[in-house]
Amino acid sequence: MNKLAIIGAGSMSEALISGIVSSKMCETTDITVTNRGNENRLIELQERYGINYSFDLEKVIGNADVIILAMKPKDVREATLQWKDYLSERTLLISVLAGVSMDSLQRLIDQKVPIARAMPNTSAMVGKSATGIAFNSFVVNEQKQFVLDLFKTVGLVTVVEEEQLDAITGLSGSGPAYIYYLVEAMEKGGLKIGLDREVANELIVQTLIGAAEMIAVSSKSPQELRKNVTSPGGTTEAGLRILEQFDVQNAFISCIEEATAQSKKMGKALTDELKLSK
Figure 1 (cartoon, rainbow, N blue to C red):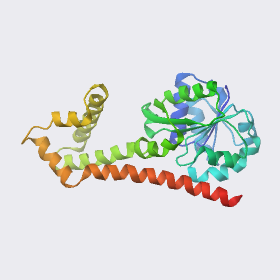
Figure 2 (cartoon, helix red, strand yellow):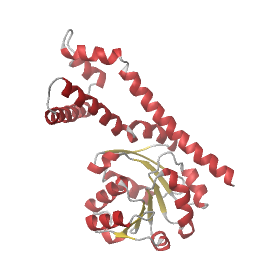
Figure 3 (spheres, one colour):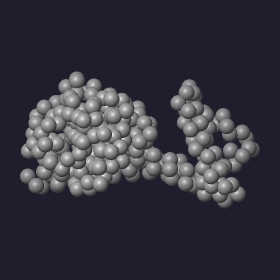
Figure 4 (cartoon, rainbow, N blue to C red):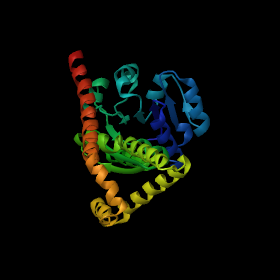
């Protein structure tokens, strides 16, 4: 599996390219990226990573052993129609498209090919993604190992059933945005109590890193760790009382549920569209 094609040139594509190039999984000359027509972006990636780019879809797809689908999910149908006739049954498709099922992809390309569906998150840009991966029945062991090795270059990987990917999308796929939202609130709180933005940000980032490391290395649950730093009548208890007053924990739970539901909704919309087009 030497020749790799990437359709889409956004941040996730770049994160994967960076991981692949730095790990030397493929020669840079064996990686080709394409998009709808933004040549400046393709030139940028070429200059930064030494890879190829092309708008010749017959050449890009026809020569590829592995194709990574990284365009916007709403564009998948239009994009697939442009290159599906160049696809070989031996070619492995790797999709990072939220809400797009492997069955929908199979219907779009109208042939039985090996497909891996992955849900990384944007922390792949710093090698810290949490990625869930599912495979269809046509993926052979060698291809599975390639996919696992590929996503390990950008973080942690876990293999799941496809039905769980909507939940992974809602939890860890969208998860970085929830943390950034929390940091925004903590920054505003820091400013309100008189800290400079730079000082507040530095303290918040280190606090998050430290808390994450504690969860990772400790045998205690997050609930136990929270209780350990919550002294009766102390400052932490006073702050947590406000979070409980505003029902913040349930708000986060609802946030994850809603994101999961949206992933399912997106997938169903495409499935229904494909059924109507038959």
